[in-house]
Image 1: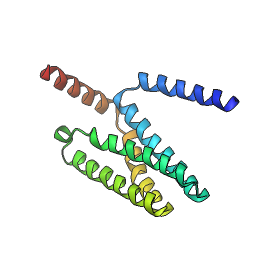
Image 2: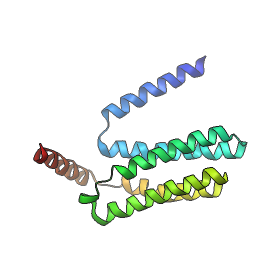
Image 3: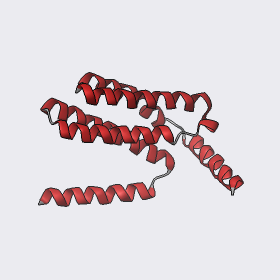
Image 4: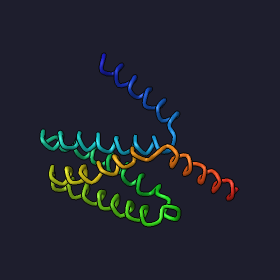
Length: 143
């Protein structure tokens, strides 16, 4: 009973965090969510909880696909193209991990995602503001 209350509280806090987050923070939250789901996946593989493994790996895959599909390939140039390819590779590797029940492959994806997340946290505030302003101007130009 108490666990349900804690989970409801966590969901409420997550919704509040999402509603107040800027695009940079949302991306960080998605990356962390992927890493969390991959950690759960590893635990499920170790316990031979294949239903749980499939659920968590599916959610991690969906988040990676969202990160991949929301890249601005026009504005992002080579960096966005490379990230698209890397996210796509990670998705494919998670499909392999799911089929093979492979901790090694899950660890590979974690190892690939961690430096991206670390780099994302290092983006200076001025660069974030510049990017938001460019996006705002781009949206206004299309309206």
